Length: 243
Image 1 (tube, one colour):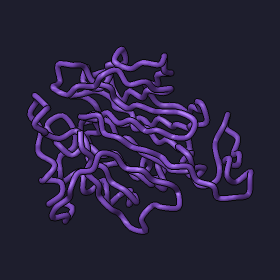
Image 2 (image 1 turned 90 degrees about the vertical axis):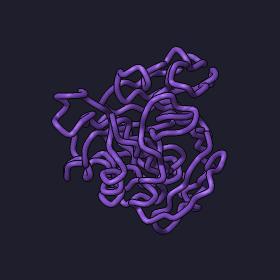
Image 3 (image 1 turned 180 degrees about the horizontal axis):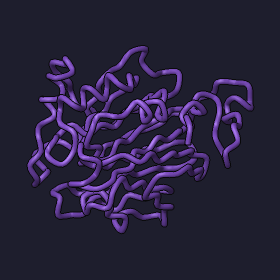
């Protein structure tokens, strides 16, 4: 597929054609806010000016309460039950379940094939990493990535503004590997996911292990994170979101 990520800074890949993004066509820098809320586990609500994306919805037996959020788009990284409960989402969304290139309601999404383990998928199967452009902000949801990225995958992903990163180990990468992935991608913003909380009834490692690994002493969780293209930090910052 080459390096489709390079279009995320002013260019967009549509039907294999490189086209200017909206702000490039207008010749101005008017950036809408992208609101990111963590709904628990690997599930986020990403709200842009034209569409809402929900990632990896989970079932009630996980311990979290999803409610019935509405979305225009749902991404599913793999078909394990804790990441594919699409019936929990309202609004008759378009569901994306694998690699490819998609444009829906002004949101560009590129799915990249990876594995759910460090043995080429022989234990846990495949996983899809999603790179999406929402209002000129590039977000990468790693799903249940099970390995460090290859050089080719890093090249495909390119410049990542916001990295939604599993850190809890057990069924995905642990704190040490997650820190390596951050160093591979050098995103502006890192938001940990898929770790042990009081609500979760499954055993995962706590987020504190990742924070120690990456050299962050203490963070206060916040209800949501609102970003624009112009408000992104100059260097990598980690944010914790409240469930």
